[in-house]
Each structure stands twice: as structure tokens, then as C-alpha cells.
Length: 238
Image 1 (tube, one colour):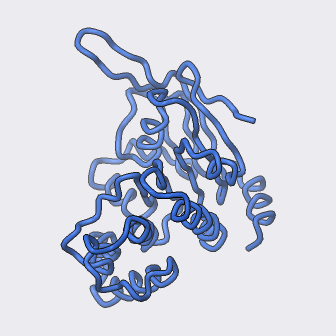
Image 2 (tube, rainbow, N blue to C red; image 1 turned 180 degrees about the horizontal axis):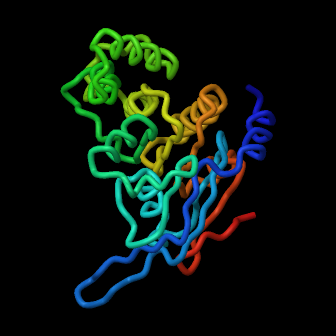
């Protein structure tokens, strides 16, 4: 689907992800440090957003809360109008497995396992039958250009190839939203550009919402919206 159609659909569907009155602080000894303060954030279906800014302002904290890897001190996280932080831990883990994909600067792959074995793990965790999980993993690995590396141990792959495996793992269940935290922070310019292009292609193909935390100005410029965090609240960037 062309990018303009995705943007149009995002406008028609009022925020399918909504953050409301989000607060998060951390304690350093006897000092409490406020990171997010009554923060509001709305994301449309298929939208692409870059969260940019200096280190320590709360970018990754916000991303982890949107992905339900961390809980806020207070506030709501609504997916299609339902506050997922009201779920018990089991239901929340199930939601996260089925609906959210993650890509990090450090890929967190298992180096002694093959690309295929790494990519199929979310499907196995979900309880998908092994043959179907294998097929889904093969399809997404082929899509990210690793058709000749399916059975290579991840530890033998290049940095760019490893990040493609991580991307395939994140997308094997076709999540509603992909969250990427400095996804090309450890890659050279050539591999970074390839991953940037791949992220945008997959956003269009799968109609997934894409939220990227990045210091990379080129990657940020590809997103339809750029925001930062100032004094604990979300602020637009030019």
C-alpha cells in the first residue's frame, strides 16, 4: 500500500495506541528523578514516529512502557481503547508476544542457534505448532534478505545480518506495532541505510505502527512524525 494511503488511514482511525497522564520516576539513593510527567501520546494505525533527543530524557523509558516491558508509576496505556495495564501478568505477556515486536541496538539473539531458530522463537512461545512456526520464520527471513543464511548460526553472521535476524524475529507474528530502540546504533553506514529502507518497506507492507528511538538523523527524517521529550512531556520536532 502506498505511503499516502497509510497516512490517510492513520488520520481516519483515531489513535489506536493512546498514552494518557503517564508518570514514571526512578530513585537514585534518596533522590527521586522524574522521567515522564503527565505525558500524553497518540499513535495512529500504520503511523511512523521517531523519538529523538539527548540521552537520559526518557526516550527508551517511554518505548519500554508502550511495549509493556515496564510499567508506569501511574497513567493509562490504551490499545484500541483498552487499558492493557489492567491485565494480569499472564495476559499482559500474551498481549506483548502477539501484538508488539521489538528491535534493540543490541540484538539479544542466541548466538549458538541458527537464524531460523532465533526467528521462530516468538511463534513457539505463543504455542504455534513447530511446522507452522518454521514456515513463518522462513518467510520473514527470506523477506529481509536472508534466504541463504537460514541455517547459519547467528554468531557466524555479520552485524547487519544479525540485525536482520532480530528484525525477522520481531515480525514473525506480524505484530500491530514495531518498537525499535537505536536499531542501527551498532551498524556501519551501508548496513544502517539498508535497515532504514527495510523498516520503511515493512511498515508499508504490514501496515504496522512503527516507533523508533534514534540519534540517527537520517532514520528520523524517514518517519512521518518526529517528537522529543522535554520536562517529562512529549514535544514535537520540526
